Image (cartoon, rainbow, N blue to C red):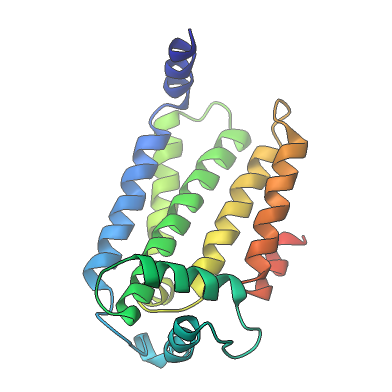
Length: 204
């Protein structure tokens, strides 16, 4: 019975999940092909914080204000547990993974919002529109440049995407709003531990 209900739920979602998964993997593939092999200042020297962030994470120190504690702890854990390349490459790899996940969150947010704005819009059209939006974002030069070096911004977009998706679920009447609000609050708290600009998205 449970299996049958799960299959019906998957069918109702239509092509959304598989196309979103493919879009996320495509973005990740691009980032892995272009990720910096070690410490890099990035595109047009806009990644100059990489050395500061890597050194601070490696020694569990504190970088320039505001300190980015969430990113520091995540980078330290990822750099310690993932046995690939040097510590700088692992930091770059972490950014690539977070950037791809951000694109995935954007895809799912657009897919859900489009279904709320126009309930008669075909599922495939929603999926294509969401995929186009996510891939356009993923390949934007500025964002791409941050996805292949060690920087805090891809973690910031990760939290922004997560909050947007959570907000889209909070509008569903049949959802457990209390539990979702608790999860959203935890997400916001961790996100603010990375970058304070998240308030610009969360407060409105």
